[in-house]
Length: 204
Image (cartoon, rainbow, N blue to C red; front, side):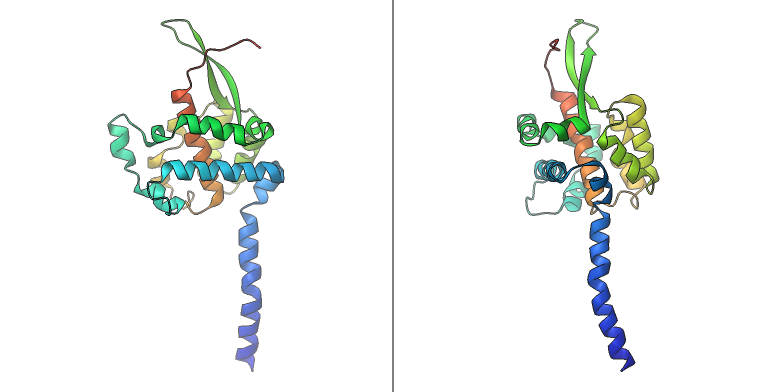
């Protein structure tokens, strides 16, 4: 009889445990974004996964780990440059301006040789996405360090987060965690935008 009761309790408890685990993934998102914006963030992650994966039916973790990161970097051709920038700009149009403006802002970059001023993407200081990073960083030291660097520079830099860092801190970069997937998606899309955007700065 006692065994039956224990089994019954376990059966009842399992859905609750898994439900709590699932909801914990979205707590920090709900604290900083609206439902519509969270849906936009999922679009960003899915777009990045699609561009990253050669096997369309593979999961995020498999896709990321199958990329020859180190050899591509050694050849001067980092993997994020495979992202189609025209499609990326279309993605920007598919998400709401409020979502975009909580993650990214545009600034000026001047090229010394020509003194031409170009439009460049950067991080929004103290915006919702920065606060989201700060929230995740409360229980994840690697993300905390990343968030601090973003806040200090207002820039997304390859040195702040790369494959080597992820390898050294696998526990903190669980590639099956939607939060980590989103952070990587925004990180690499930012790097791709920085590398490929060639628009002159126009005074508004």
